[in-house]
Length: 351
Ligand SMILES: [Zn+2]
Image: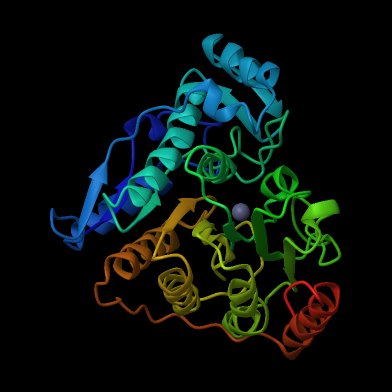
């Protein structure tokens, strides 16, 4: 079985505003880079053109009146939701195709048509709330796919790991009171970065208590902090939760060269996370694993991380890139404190 990349031309036609960092080039440059290295072939990696999601598939996650608003603004040629989140005439169609790509990807994995997949889409989704567009996002693609797995495919437990530099507020809120979808976010502390949420004390409520985990990172946190978070929190939580499917919100903006954030991951740090996630999926969820692109605003980093991800998912040798960054003792000390705090909060549930 091979790895599938879900991509549609419509993803490049949605444009927020001229020179906006969430640009079509993020996808086109990444795809070109993967192709140039000879990584797309029939045997190991294939490109799939997705179909749009239906309103029925989106409506468990979003108010229909809000979706209608996106449609109307798009049909009208454009309009703003927030100062940095606007639509053009292609946005509605692109958002439906991005959500549709996620559904198609998890279906292909469930049906054994592919072993795993990367949804290389725009617009991204993890900031989109039930009734509003936010942070360059309109429809929460990963939440729609998780819900589809639960309600249509009969999966009991889905785990979402979100390593985008920004907290996935929309995803957290979608499943905050539920124990069937476990959200883990690794993100820059909300006191220092948009959207401000994602405190370690936000652990879910009601039935969902203990099924929302925020590993908030100090600015400058890098490979060492993330490795520790995987060792101390994510690995034991996977053992305890036993996910049947793992979904990843992969934002490549946690790299130290990203222009919008101040985290400190290197390409090898991302490679470490992807390799550990892949191993966890093989062990706990029969390898069922789908990645969704969220952020990432340095084009060269986008290219390298996309290539690394495809190499990891398809089982090819990993290309190493020589970039390095040393994180401070302050950020390591902060990571240790957050980990201890989380272990206390989650005691009796996962620890
Ligand atoms: Zn981000």
